[in-house]
Length: 168
Image (cartoon, rainbow, N blue to C red; front, side, top):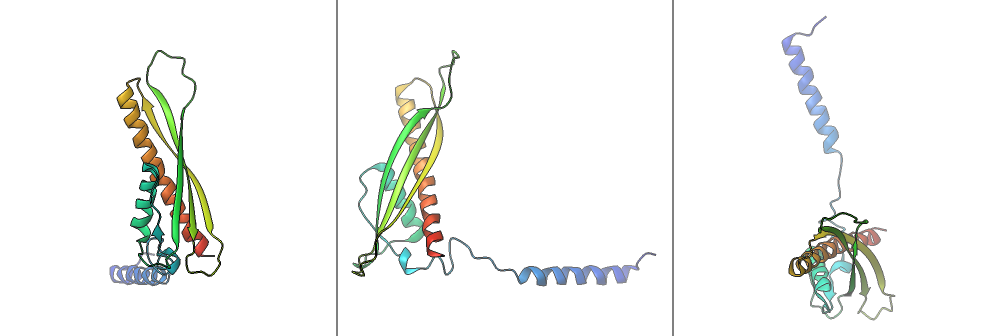
């Protein structure tokens, strides 16, 4: 038995309205905005960077959380280090070698409102791969660019760790 055209249209419209209502009842909490991202703990003051990697991480965190000039704003201090290693064994005549730059970043948030709260520390590691060709200038530029990519990835991981700790 087949349904008539008007009855099919009514059933299809009913399904669409029902699905729209069911999906409308769902709620999502975005990581980039909303109640979680507007926490007073996230209004940070940042220390001065000591290296280019620390500067990249501070810039990424300030971009996501914003900055505060208040004297009582929590102080975010970052220390970052990098290391490079050749990936795999190369026994070929090809001069290009795959390398991996690893950045380890530690973020310490210190309360400056004299409440005696212990500092919160997060440590994250991120890697980025690059290729060396034996040309010193090109190899140096590729390593620096990979270090910045790894620093941005570590900053994103630190940001998510902060949000996760605040949601507990």
